[in-house]
Length: 262
Image (cartoon, rainbow, N blue to C red; front, side, top):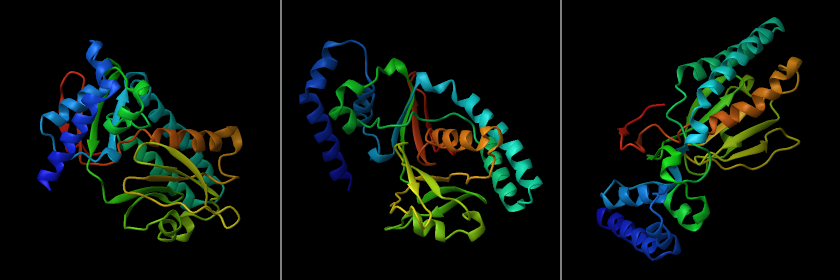
């Protein structure tokens, strides 16, 4: 496996050096994210799961703490409203959402989208300048999928062939009752809105490190538009979370952190 991994790295580096992007990089003094990835490979780094690689751009980094605080604050009146309307189970679930947000730091994080070396090689115009990147890295592929359901937040063990329907069936019925749609967040941070009710059901496979948020159903938080805000902004924030727990993170100043826990 080690020999194979080295061969793969050598092939990636070789293809890159022969590519038009490499020629451009050699002419331009400003280093790019791809240069950082290449340096990582050449230093003999452990095998990288490109599907769980990430980067955080400077333009996104500073706003994340404010967004985390705002979402937690918006969930407080929503929880009280659920209690006042006689829905204690829902109130407990929303409280768990809030506690999860409050218990996790906004950083480290990632900018949603692909930032791995193979993708950058195929999309040269999207290779950011390293000076515009706060951090980058990769995570070991985790063994879970995370579901933000109406009863709280659960991590379910991933297994081959797992889909959204099977994942939701593994939860207590009162944690999904009334939900009509869910937002799937891939390990790359891409968001996909999917139907989960009988009338709009869509087949949705799940991969390790995915997150799913069940949208709040009509009647929950309609006053003041809180339901719409949560349904739109919470998945966007979850898309900035790292796609695993055992991660190696590097910064533009050369700092490195391993084994980061979310």
